[in-house]
Amino acid sequence: MKRELWTKKSKRRLGRREFLEWSGLAASGLWYPALLAAAESRSTAPADEELDCDVLIAGGGLGGCAAALAATRSGARVVLTEPTDWIGGQITQQAVPTDDHRWIESCGCTASYRELRQRIRDHYRRHYPLTDEAQQRANLNPGGPGPVSPLAHEPKVCLAVLQEMLAPAVQAGRLRLLLDTSPAGADVAGDRVRAVRLVNARGRREMTVRAKYFIDASETGELLPLTGTEFVTGSESQAQTGEPHAAAEARPANMQAVTWCYAVDYLEDEDHTIDKPPQYDFWRQYRPQLTPPWPEHPFLSFWYSRPGTLQPLELSFVPTMGRYAGMRTPTLNLWVYRRILNLANFRPGAFSSEITIINWPQNDYMLGNPFGGPAEENARHLEGARQLSLALLYWLQTEAPRPDGATGWRGLRLRPDVLGTADGFAKYPYIRESRRIVAETTILEQHVREPAAQKIGRHQVAPPFADSVGVGSYSMDLHPTTGGDNYFHVGAYPYQIPLGALIPKRMENLLAGCKNIGTTHLSNGAYRLHPTEWNIGEAAGALAAFCLAKHQPPRRVRSQESLLREFQDSLLRAGVELDWSKLAAV
Image (cartoon, rainbow, N blue to C red; front, side, top):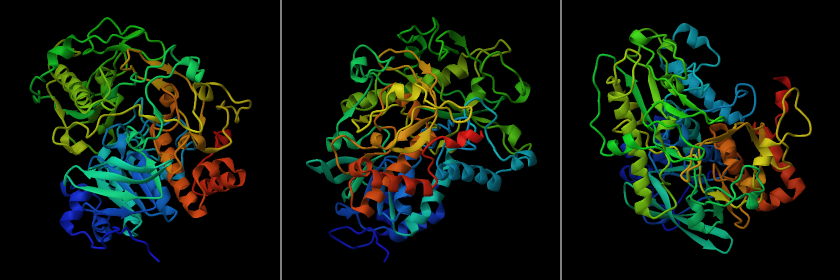
């Protein structure tokens, strides 16, 4: 029998207008049509009432989407909330294309993440005028080649793909999406969450969702303080973690910079200079006060500290089109760095310009954190991050040096259509570091920096976790921090994701579902990227569904060997890689 999501006080179905207000679809013309139709047909009245489900997932980022897919595919009834009107988190609303490891095309991610990547490529093949050569390329990279992403693409393409992947669960009545909706309170009894109160930003209405399990997949760990779940922020001390590179003293407010990204193209013979931003003069004079020191140059320049060595390095910037087509630069060309559309991959005349995302060292905001403080302070830092990005754009348009000796690239144009906003800025700043649960297992620097006893083939990997629920790989990469630390970038071995890092020390029915797992300030730098976040979310959603089916709490699944093996076997059947054994063939 099909189970639907009904309110406790009423079985009245939502009218079209009520549904659109709650889902956020009224303001978005980008939604996958089948998802819109399915969601309308299955929604029920939530306005100022209570809703029952099996699993509430707060946050529709990569972890949240993966959790929803895993839980609904196992038969659970899920409510998924998202504070903006775009699901996808860092890959869509924050405009950060995939930053995948070097083995991603063959191993090191879940089957569903591989499906996501393949669907993105197929979307371009079906709907874009690719060249014949690009059409046939197995590892199509629409914005490539480039130094960061093997799948640089437009955020709205991934949005369409995620909507498509979630549509069957919505159609089946197992998934309810609430866009423009955030948690605002919680009903907690002892070590269990009973319900979460939600607020819809558009309708300004509230609803209460009761669930058996709650997954915090929000960008900043919003459920943790609301539910009283123990968490940490910022950098721990060496006495707390024993990590070789931890600081002498803990600094809870010392977090990685956030970045407000935006999309631009370049039209050589046009002038798209924006109005001078209100804080431009401040940022033009700004010099980061970091340890070790930032280069002796203005922040609004092409100079930065090279991660790994921290030596001063001047980067380059040349839109590689028109008279600069094919031009080689002496250092990394920032135009290519985060490019998401390369004209060379498309038929001549298909587009007037390439498109790139401005997500650079020069718009990393280090003056404070946009969450965790008083509302006015949070808002001030959000606006500060935005003003820095505006100042960088204005500097690029008016003062940046050019190869021809002139200054300013006035043809740089913001692209609102690419990011689904009125101004061309991302819907949400890129958050590198969240609140983190105090977990059953805390992943330390040593867990990714020390080698395992045996190699896999010719590859060295990190030590194994017996309760592994997935794998990932990335350097331990920390951007400059709000506490004045410069880059920290060291290598890390391919690692596993321990189940214990998803389970809080005390709470019985709340799970971490993204960057808020039990990592430290340092190890978070290796666990914050796209494929790892997706794997974390998928494991959390699968665990919630498994616990529901077995009538066993997460802690017992981890501690009882037979249950753990059964759960891990279910992950393997779903295409989750629990170790790096496939590296032997690479």
